[in-house]
Image (cartoon, rainbow, N blue to C red; front, side):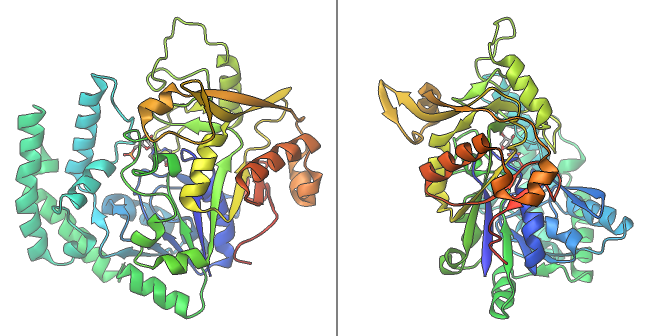
Length: 454
Ligand code: IMP
């Protein structure tokens, strides 16, 4: 049995919490895309762990796999592993030999390109972790993979081919001086040492075979997606996306397992009861805005919903885990969720942050869009057309703040009636059952109606 956990919106929907909870029933936790641009906080036995690359199962004694669809910064990987070991956790993490390696020059180039793009308000507000440039090299067939770090002749050969190109790009195209991050000898020494450690600790695997064997042995595997559907390079709002496929299909290409295996399991979409977004791009249901991220944000213009956006941002702790940036806030967007449900084939849904909306008189939902005078129920394919969409809202009666711990103990029926009406609407519109509802940040503050692996 497998379960794939996918962000249904723009990332930061609370996937980590659910992955952590459901990983209890799994033996293996596997990430299939992304790198250290993700950020999740896991609380275990009263201790808080902040991770960006290592899957959350590491803290629970599970086997963890970074699939071939991931881009791996070995420096981050070992920093996170060392920090966990210092705290008495002994994580079992395996890395696909086919996964691509993030090098320091990728990070530098990520920053350079963002700076250049920002001159024409075209920047993506990336996490600066070198994600895009590493996937670019993968697609350009000049990338260096984890398996190459274990063969020093191959590593040197590849570095000698690629680094001069990167240096020329930085210096001659962008006019930026380069340093150690572009020095072949320094990179070789550092990354050969990473390769040695990967080999010594027996960390590398052929992910597809490794996972297939575990599944054949009857073990359950949880696939943990990073980011979210609208940040998907194919199905998101390009170009304001990450450079991988967080959508469920990424589970196959990012691990080496066939669609039959993934499709035989459950695919659970994690959504927030409202929206938040780090980074630029349209957000038709946006409340207020954030300087530097909201495309038409003008500090001198009075923005009616600014106070509500601030309130929700504070209540929901809406600041980037990796970057600390304030997130933009919006009402739930149903065209986005319809798009996401189709692109992923959700078999179940988790709706988080029902408690964050408590205390409002009215809760609104972008039910549909109007584009060129016509109603549409899902997203247009281009970002520019999406920016032209005007949300038409439905209004729900709000619910009061409550003793959420007690509600989490008692179960779904203990939720305020208006909150249940809101959840019923979402489930009916998407024709997907609600598997769990988040009513607080803690691990126990989740009402689970259906555990896909139990
Ligand atoms: P990159 O993945 O660092 O290249 O960033 C590309 C876009 O994805 C930017 O808008 C980021 O803010 C966004 N992004 C990347 N990772 C996350 C995440 O874990 N949560 C939310 N947004 C993310």
